[in-house]
Image (cartoon, rainbow, N blue to C red; front, side, top):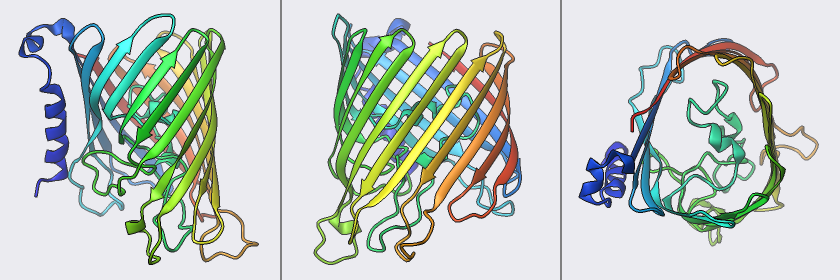
Amino acid sequence: MCSPTRNAAAVALAILAVAPAASAQDVSRVAIESAIGVDEFGGENAVARAQVVIDISAAVRLSDHWQVYARPWFRQARPSTSTAPVPPWDTELYGAGLRYERPGPVATRADAGYILSPIGLGLFDVRADANPLIAPHISYVVPMPSFDATGPRATPVANSYPLGAQVTVSTLRWDARVAVVNAARAYAVGATANPRQTPVAVFGAGVTPKIGLRLGASFAHGAYATSEEITTPGSDGRAVTMAGAEGEYAFASTRITGEFMRSSFETSTTPAVAYEWFVQGTQTLSPRWFVAARREAVSAPLPATASAAAARPTLDMFEATAGFRMTPEITIRSSYYTRQTYGATSWDNQVGVSLVWARRWW
């Protein structure tokens, strides 16, 4: 049996191999970027060991409108405890597919393959050089407490790169998208554990009333757990309905983004509803210096064993970051980071540092 690492690498090579042989010799048709991030946190409940992430994006232009792309991702993660052995490198594929783009008064873009999940604004902060802070959006990656004893755990929004297809149309004033993907939970080629595949429909739209300001909404519906993942005999699976609002505002040297998401999960009894939100701001102080902050929270459904009068589990975090661009390719960051995880009674206070090297090779 092939390892997840080999599977991810094979998919990336297969996608890029469809380009004509002559394209490999024409650098104007090829784009390769890489971002290497090293970060470490210290303080309460922090693991004093660095995490290393290598994120590579490659694309080959087949013609004026068509291109193929692949994004392999490698991580040497922090162990669960400071005395645990260093884990092996995780290798996943964050996107691999075929894209069609047509400019015009009504521009069109279509993607097919392993695509970025069409729901969730925080996914655009995954790459180390795109994230103005150090920590990721933890609400996308930390599962909520189990709210249905017969089904799997879930997140209110998934950090996901599912198999699917998406069509986006846009003008200077509005945009809209429709997609069908294979999972409502976190999915990526090469991941150690992927959910069962099942169709999920996603819709989204936005308006741009003026330059720099966009307001949008998104909606998704589909099974978050198949019948094979439900322990109740004869179950047809469990569906989730997600609805959210998002906004981006950039002016002068300031950029503010945020979202609010409501996710309703079917259970063996009444639906379980989760709420997720974040607000994030970045201020450029000079060509080299910037500051950023993020406030993020989740209100999760009550665990299956909790009484109706119990308090809802919450996940809360705040991070404030100062960054310095040593060169156009190298950025260093330092953060104050505090969080309260599900079921915790106090906040963990930590300090983090990171070094990011990002470069476009062609």
